Structure formats: structure tokens, C-alpha cells
Length: 157
Image 1 (cartoon, rainbow, N blue to C red):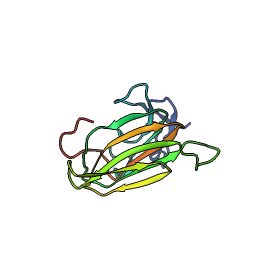
Image 2 (tube, one colour):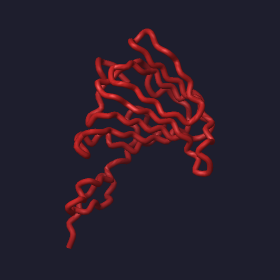
Image 3 (cartoon, helix red, strand yellow):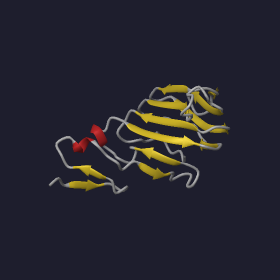
Image 4 (spheres, helix red, strand yellow):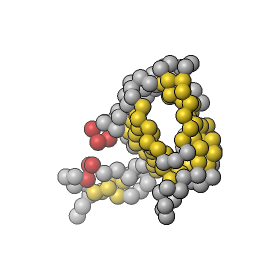
């Protein structure tokens, strides 16, 4: 008889030699924007998989300001903006604004209007991040190359 561990979603995870590499403790309501979007995330699982990555996957269905202020991290980060269309990944009907810069004051605003991957080196300021126009749902994936997501300094969002 196989023993099982329970996650918060009540899905059994096998207790086997390689079962420790799986988790179903992923689905969360957004703590910052309840009711706006749900998140599939490993961010709260500090040390999961050896503590090398933190991944958030969010379906965006309406406009909102995700991050209102510039901030930076001590680790690199990858932001991905994809179509959520299962029929055609080229269908991307959204406009996202993000600012990148060397400091909090002097930044370049970039406008994303098609599927895009963005690499942000450690120490580069980024934000605001504004999902300004969302005419069709999109998928946002945020990968932090760190086991624990932290910002440098004191930024509220």
C-alpha cells in the first residue's frame, strides 16, 4: 500500500523515491488583487527543487497595474507575455507597458503588443508594469532565478 502526502488542493502526491520532485500546491488566489486573477505559482515554496527558481503563471483577462513602482532584484528575472489562445498563439490583442532603467528615475518605457520574452539582469530597475489594454486573455509567466523572490529596498508592490 502506497502512502500519500496531501497538498492544499487535496490531490495526493505519491510518497516514492521520486515523488518528492512533484507538488500540486500551486493554485492560489492573487494576494494583491483578489478576484482579479488567480495564479499558479511556486513562489511560496521556498527551496522547492533545490531553490533555484520561482515561477508564477497568470492568466490576465482585464487591464490593471500589476507593479506601480520601479524596483530591482539581486537575481535575474524572465518575464513572458503570451497569447492565451489555444487556436493560434499569434493572436495577441493586448498592450502592456513596462519601464526598464539604471535607476528609479531614469527609465525607458517599452510597449509590448505581441508575444514577447523579456530578460531582466540582476540589479536592473523595472516597473511600473501596466497591463494597459487586454482585449483577449493572455498568459503572463514570471520566472525569478532564485529560490526566494525578494526585492531590493522597500517597495510596497
